[in-house]
Image (cartoon, rainbow, N blue to C red; front, side, top):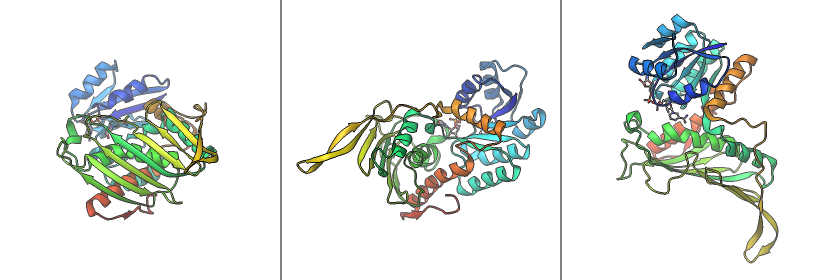
Length: 343
Ligand SMILES: NC(=O)c1ccc[n+]([C@@H]2O[C@H](COP(=O)([O-])OP(=O)(O)OC[C@H]3O[C@@H](n4cnc5c(N)ncnc54)[C@H](O)[C@@H]3O)[C@@H](O)[C@H]2O)c1
């Protein structure tokens, strides 16, 4: 049995607790939130009787001595939570983003290394069937290597809460999913970025609800991102909508179920090379999916087998470096090299 304390009983904690109760061999032994009433409400909602509830993670860890901590707090509290978990010799699975600054990201990854504990991030948009299919299809070489990766993200949620007050809200709170998916699907090592942020007149956020970024992914690959969190109308999926251009064809994914590809055929049609549809194969049984549930399972598997999970902090920090470099570019108005230290 793996005993776990979950910290941060806000909106997202439901996804974690929904997943946790589907996993045999996992027991939630404590719930922590600065607001004790929230923690109590979750315990009641999920029928978690007899567990320890508190407002201090240190105190609840002292009392319960669990194997792992599930961190679902706001990004600003992540470092404090991570250092507390590792100081108590716990493994740590954390919500995205891994940290709220490059310094905090490095400090957390280093603390995990020193403690010798597994540290992974819920970068759950990797655990989506079509993301796995695209990666496998590109790896197969059916349309050659990806050269130009384009993602659009236009969603206009009224969350309320911390997002409407934070700086760089789209880049720091959401774009990590899209950046990580690009890095995963198309491969490559992010080398530099140019990014502009702006606040449209129709925005209800304090800062950074809209952004456009151009990344150099090395080897001649370029990734462009256009996003807004206040674009009413023609909403894209949470995954974004994608066009990936490769050496011998292209694929389009609407972020939902529509995933199509065309490959160059022989001959010309006037100005244009002939193309023909090519099937993107279905999900391979070896492809891991399932959002939070899939990631929690992988995290537990890594602990049980002494292996490293896919979304380990030491790799996820490379996607986070894309975020922080984009923010630096937006702040300085200059192209920014993506740090060798983190990539
Ligand atoms: N993976 C995803 O798809 C996804 C989606 C939405 C949010 N998130 C992430 O989940 C995290 C939480 O988001 P949310 O929407 O649940 O926020 P929220 O504000 O609803 O909940 C956060 C909770 O953490 C508590 N908290 C803050 N600091 C704490 C501390 N030091 N100790 C104990 N409790 C503390 C707050 O009291 C609050 O109850 C964020 O990092 C967010 O980016 C991920």
